[in-house]
Length: 279
Image (cartoon, rainbow, N blue to C red; front, side):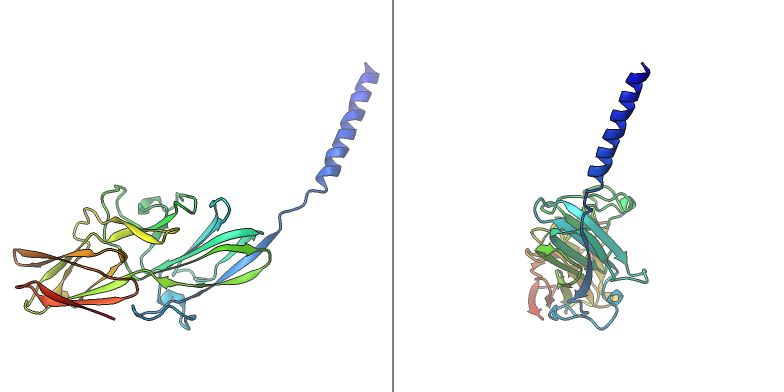
């Protein structure tokens, strides 16, 4: 019995040595540090999105999110989000295993979620593959059909199929993905304009806006007595609707607002004759 126990112990020691020997040859995954330089931001809708701003980027946006996806299978690998209250706002570095990635950068003057919209769930991140991923302006209600108007100046950039095998700084030139609509009614002293059916979300892969405002509780109403009426529009590929109201009379008109264009709609309420100018 004693001899058997000694034999078992000897075998155990040999196995342990083998595991240790093989284990000592496991190579660690090589990673690279990817820093980002954000460009293309500017203050004026209609200006080209080129170069790098000389001002702090907090002067242009309140949130910046950068996401890395695996190009091969579309899985989200990592993301970082910063708000303008951070002393290091705009200084984002990702540690990534060497490989091939799709990089996405989103910046806006409205805070937004990635793959989610209910602001009470900000601490519960949702991860989707690249083909399904989106960003959505945060909403105060969890109900899918209650979407408030939240659009503000918003920028987007992506680079697809980037091979990473060393430390580097990646330049991301942000493109403005919203337009600006101004409304002027010349034959009324006071009036209100209620924006209809702007969208609240944006698909990362196809770069198209979707999800219309629903039950928005007057979030997109503007009054002329409060100053010039303007709306940022993310629904840039199809028309948006406007309800113009004076007293109890309401009339409806539609207008196209392309991205990074300033559209001024000017006309008369009595005849509903309007012209639009593009800047």
